[in-house]
Amino acid sequence: MSELTGERVAKVIARAGLCSRREAERLIAEGRVAVDGVTLESPAVTVGPDNRVTVNGKALPAPEPPRLFRHHKPPGLVTTARDPQGRPTVFDKLPAELPRLMPVGRLDLTSEGLLLLTNDGALKRRLELPATGWTRRYRVRVFGRVQPERLAELAKGVRIAGIAYGPIAARLDSQQGANAWLTMGLTEGKNREIRRVCEHLGLQVNRLIRVAYGPFQLGKLKPGAVAEIAPKVLAEQFGEAPTGPSAARKIGFAKAKPRPRKPGDRKRAARKDGTAGAGRNTGKKSRAHRRRPA
Image 1 (cartoon, rainbow, N blue to C red):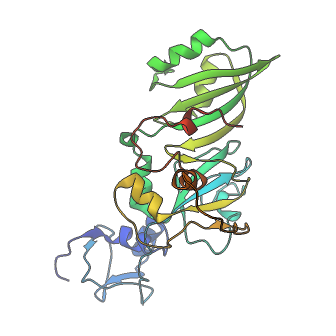
Image 2: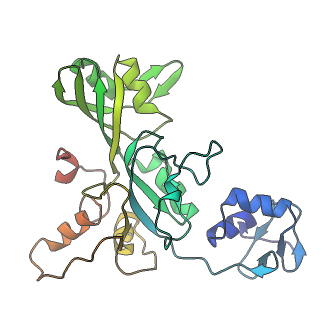
Image 3: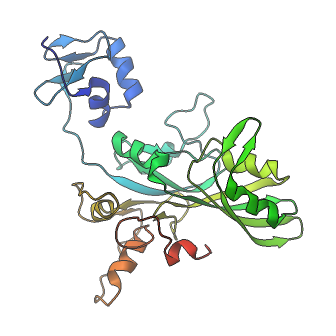
C-alpha cells in the first residue's frame, strides 16, 4: 500500500455515518476494514480522497453534509448510544428517520432541556470547545435558602475539592419557602458542574433545565421533540455554508401554514429556528438572551 495522507481511516468511516469512530476502530481490529484492497491491522492509517475504503467488502457510502438538530431531552434518559446498565437512552427515543447522530456535550440522567445533536464529528468538537466562548444557560430549581451575595461571588470562579471552575453568571429569580429558582450561565460545562457548585453553596438541585447553548435556544420545543437547524443558520453562526436540506424540519409536528412576510420576519424566523437572532454569534447578548424563560 502506498503512503496514505489525509484523515484517519476511523474518522472517515464515522464521517460516512456507518458507525462511531470507536466502533470503526473495533472493526479495524477485527480485520473487517480494507484500504485499496489491503486489510488494515491498525487504525493508525490515514486516507485521502483517492483511496477506496471498504468495510466488510462494501464501499463506504458518500458522507452526508453537516447537520445540526435541537432536541428537548426529557429527564430519565442517558446521553449515550448504549448504556452498559441497560437504562433507556436519548437515542432510543429519537425518530427512526433521523441519521446517526452524536450529542454535543451531555446532560446527565435527571437533567432535561436543550441537547444539540449532529451527524458530523468535526462540528461536534467545534461546538464543544470552550474557545467558542458560548454560554450554556440553565434554569435551576434548588432546595435551600439562597444567599445572593454568594451567587455573585461565582462570577470570579470557584475551586471545589481541588477542581477549579470558571466564572459562572448566576442570579436568583424567585424564592418560595425552601425552594428557589436560579438562572445560571457558564462556558466550560465540566461534569456535573452546576450540581457541585450548588452543593458548595449549601443548595440541593432538584431540577436542572438547559435552555440555551450559545445562540441556540430551547424555546417552545416540546419534551422529546427534535427540530433541525437550517443550513443557512449554521452559515450565519460559523461563516460558512454547509450544504444539505434548504430548510429546517421539525420531526413529528405539522408544518406551519405560510403567511405574508412582514418587517422583522428574518429575525423572528431565526429565533423560531432556535437561535437568539439573525447573524453570527458575536458574544453580545440579545434581548432573547436577557429575557427570562417562561
